[in-house]
Length: 146
Image 1 (cartoon, rainbow, N blue to C red):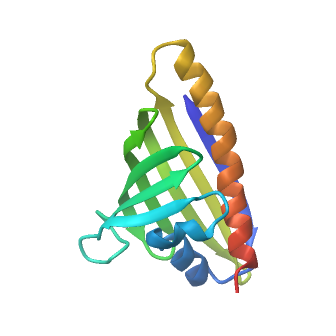
Image 2 (cartoon, rainbow, N blue to C red):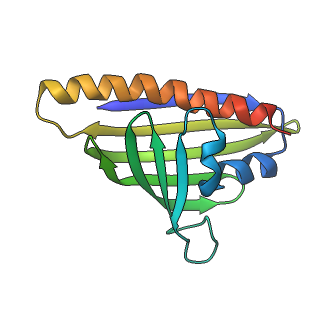
Image 3 (cartoon, rainbow, N blue to C red):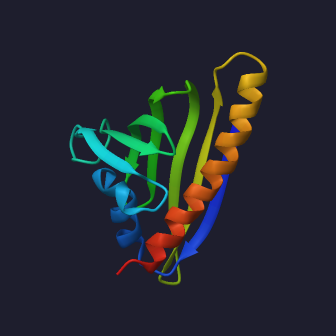
């Protein structure tokens, strides 16, 4: 099982941070992401509940459905399709809290790569390591955005 937990305080208002994090079609602006697309718009808001985004990064292609959307405090997602490795994604959650005009972000992702035995142990470790670096990089970039 992989478990990614990244926290960072960003010197930006919470509404600005949430707007960037929930702009699914523009994740490719981050170094860690090669391509991003909004495949399906949300039920009530374009990037809201029910939206499906595609993220291509490091040879992986992930389709993630937005399962929680509470602006500007919470964005939840679940990997519903993945290539080349299959995911059993249990949790994808970004929570934001306002602190003295800044935004404290907690990004968590948990799951399991469903390849038999040794493959899953190897891939879970890889996903945890690469994911932690990628999430940290994205949050760092958000702080430097104009």
